[in-house]
Image (tube, rainbow over all chains, first blue to last red; front, side, top):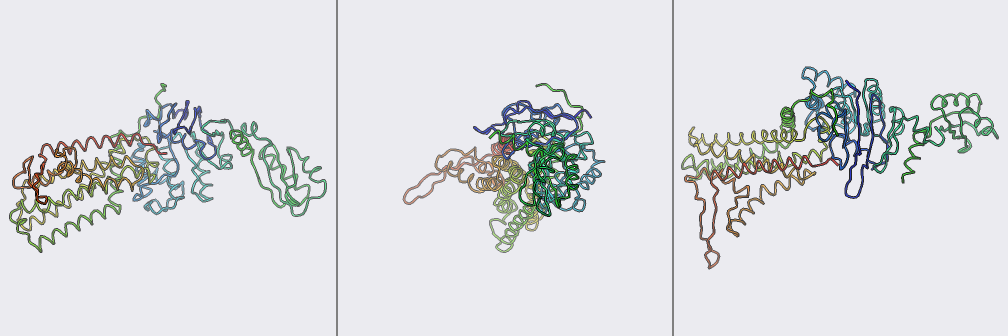
Length: 315
Length: 285
């Protein structure tokens, strides 16, 4: 299989005077997961719908694996798995039948269909429901089947539009694990999400869009370095009030700490650089100070900081 | 922009095969659906009422010979059964893909919309044909009860014309369905046209304007009943009607068999093509 790729060339979508997507140029190539971030109405879903030929661009072209999505849809989507919005399966069909329909359309050989379907349905933990009609399924159960359908036919490209929507916390975690596992199998994953933590955890790169325009596309670490004002932030809970001068003299001087402030008598906010390694060493240093640390949790990530900075600037 | 063909292309089935795949699964969805059961029950109720009326009342004019029997029984109900089938299976066939979001499940796959449209049409045609076949068998069973196995050839002609009418009705219903994103609206509009509006337009055009309503679907469907008449009615008939003290001459047009078939097939081809065009253009936004 050649390097999977996805490319938007001058892609635009206009509704009357409203530009949903405006001259988007973006090229993704290789095995990786790219997060697609932006506020509501930024153009994320519109872009993904253009890439799946659910809507037509008013300008530009969308290519997947070198084929134009609109003019050569079958070629372009031949090896693409998608979850766009929250699809519904025909309510009288079971997951096995719904997935058989997708297998048949995607050209999965008949001899392999049963095995493939059972594999993907097990992957999304829906084995127990494989022969039950989907009409009565909850939103989360349907979304699991949708994710299973995206995995059919061994796709080289996955387009996922907020794939954890409707899932409970365990389901969200399982989907993230599935996406992470796919990255190691030469897959290009383009995933929109509102959840910055999810994108930080799963994705290698991030593309941010607002008002239909691409603001930035780079690795997460580069985006964080370039646009985050002060790195990551943790909130520290204490069992007793902090002594006078400890914050300024001891806490603020820990390596990689860029700022330390008192939120109230028993809570501190520490901003630092250096990612997870620094986060771990700062915790270790705080413990050595014997100041009564009882909780230590990330409050704002570098990505979130960068996101808020970039999106704010476009308003 | 010229791009090289991807290496991975070549495993996806052809468009006709994908249409057949769509037919298979849509038909499975149809026959398991409540609407199929409801339509079957409606058709059985109509059949039961007719069976009861014929058995209890024994209408002399209808039981004088086999042709009269089939003309009365079939002529008064066959097109109605077809119209209902068209509304039930075609009314929201395409609009439901938008409203129920099933389009998001199927269409972002390497499948052309035309394959989905053709496949769904075929599934609706098969499901509606099953209803029509059951109704035909019940009609023939009653005919056999009264007249033995002497089924007039005209009845089989009429049954065939009714099936051609089904093609046209489904074409029209799919066109309406492709025009809306709401299943309720598309079913309502299909029902209004197929049950009332076409007949009303036909009457107004014929009676008030005095022109042949060759462009109205219900006019063409007259061949289903007319072919069962002892002698096929004349193309144009003038009928004097009393309106108070005045006598008004009404002109009545009767569609010929050839003309009727051409109109029905034209409806099928034109509305199906227009419906497909609309479906191809419609966006999931």
